[in-house]
Length: 253
Image (cartoon, rainbow, N blue to C red; front, side):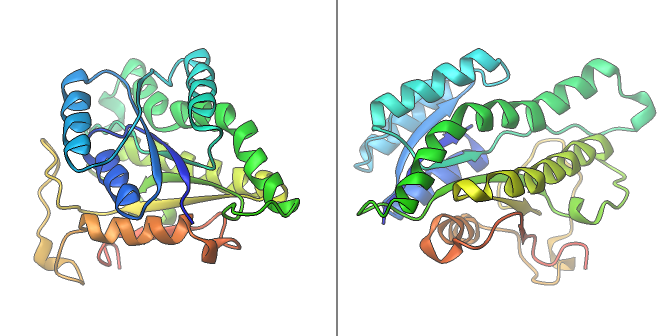
């Protein structure tokens, strides 16, 4: 059954992959972007050309009030929603001891604080989705869903040479997600993470990786990501919460 999903960072890169994957599966998408108007306009035009109706919202979820206003607007427009997917995650390389406090704050805000603001703002509406299941309301998918994105390898808490503070922020997000999963389970809301390795999306300035050295011998595709999302949003994952799906081609094995 189709869900109504709020996708944060929906119009570029991984977020766009997510939006397209959900639309392909028949889910309804409410797309949120922060500041790249050109990318949002391109996304809107191309989605319309593909026959999809996708409401698009401009909001900075690093601002708590904007996040609350956003979720209220989406709920009013959609008649409620039952899935939240947070895609943003600023990355930065460099040594820890040469990173300024301002740079670390920006990393933490993008990867953790923005996720927290959207989760808190969305929780009342996701709780309604969970309550509908408990009350036996017809034609409602099971419970609410939250999906957050990590980087492959952070689950092991190992040292990262190239992006140590980015990885540290993602490790914090993992701990956050697991605690949140425990807290929201009674409300029939699952919280899970997808940890991405090297994808087919080029990343400017990222360390070069020899794809051939990955156990699977290839990068993660949009189809790989779609399969993980479809599972986590589907009825078969009702008992799956606080977990990480590693989409990394065996990176780190």
